[in-house]
Image (tube, rainbow, N blue to C red):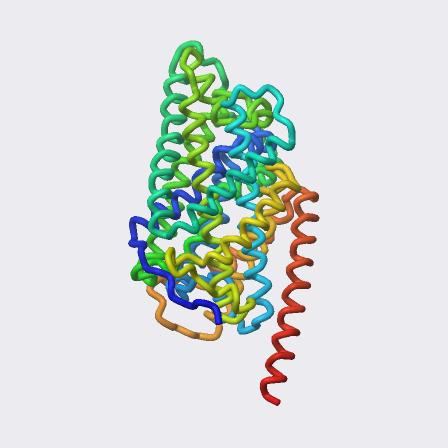
Amino acid sequence: MPNRSSLRRELGLWSLIAYGVGDILGAGIYALVGEVAGRAGRYAWLSFVVTIVLAGFTALSYAELGSRFPQSGGEASFCRKTIGWNWLATLVGFLVLCSGVASLATVSWAFVGYLLEAAPVQAASPLFKGSLLIGFVAVLGGINLWGIRQSSTVNIVCTVVEAAGLLTVVVVGAAYLMQEQAVAPPPLVCEPIAWGGVMQGSALAFFAFIGFEDMVNVSEEVRRPERNLPIAILVSLGVATTLYVAVVLVATAIVPPHELARSEAPLLEVIRRGLPDVSTWWFTVIALFAVANTGLLNFIMGSRLLYGMAGEGLLPGWLYAVHPKTETPHRTIGLVFLLAVALALSGSLAHLAGTANVLLLAVFATVNLSLVVLKRQGRAGNATFVVPIMIPLLGAASCILLIGFVPWRSLATAAAMVAAAGVVVVLFHRRARVDASEERR
């Protein structure tokens, strides 16, 4: 029998807010602002505004469901308790896992990109980059295994650093634009909006806002989760939105969008333009903290999700175990490490980010529909936060809309991962039915 000791409740409201802010901020804005600008041009800020409006519906749905079902299984638990189909709950859980692993793989490449930007390496070989990536993921795995309190402390430090970095971009950029030699046109240009590019940028910018959903996966390590989860989700999104819009406005005003799109470290390029006579190594360090923090929190989410699903009988029981000394789910941590490294070595940053987005958008649509089902059933429950039924309906529709603007290559990769997850789900539940039948005999 596996060791089934409980997770430790160590996170209060402010620690949970720091977890959420740290997960939302980071790799998304530090690494992908250039990719979004390459698609939406100087209207990249509008892509972020559209994204937060659409993502906000889903965040509100998560806030209600999190207050009703504060369990580590997260989305899988939501589906199982509302729709009631174990196979669908398992499939949704697998898709969340795949998206988390894809996100971890994405930020791993972002970390390597910023690190090589600061290192005196002119042309790093693929083998060297791959070794850096594996080492980075291994360090995150070690911190995760160390303990949730230690991981939370690292997260808080990194969150302060990455938020300070984004504020620095805004301040430096604003000061530069107020100088007489700043001749770049303002980002709020009066020209026709290319909505196709804006929506493509919005589909990619969605990656910068994911993270609020991870908060439900640490529910069993949160004190008073019924109260604290909804508050933390909404506060975290509000902080991230304010910083993001300010950063994108400044970045696209200082550096032409096509140049941002070509840069592997776009915000570093903004700082270089704003402070041409000052060494910028310190900002690279900030960016590394930000990217590493996002990776750490994705790692935590994936391992807790697998642990929670195993605890509800949706995955093999041997995954439902915690280390006797660190009280962390060591087996699921090891599994997430192997999956993340394998996926990271198979794709590029933009491709992996798009794949993560497709998977999460599909999950978000399902979660929104599960809340619709719950409300139509008239189950009041113990929710401390309630939204009208129109919110999850709009959330599901917005997720389906954004999927249509994701590049086809990311769609193909996501489809392959969904198919693989479906095969695993079918095999597992078939075996579970056989075992149940034999026990009845």
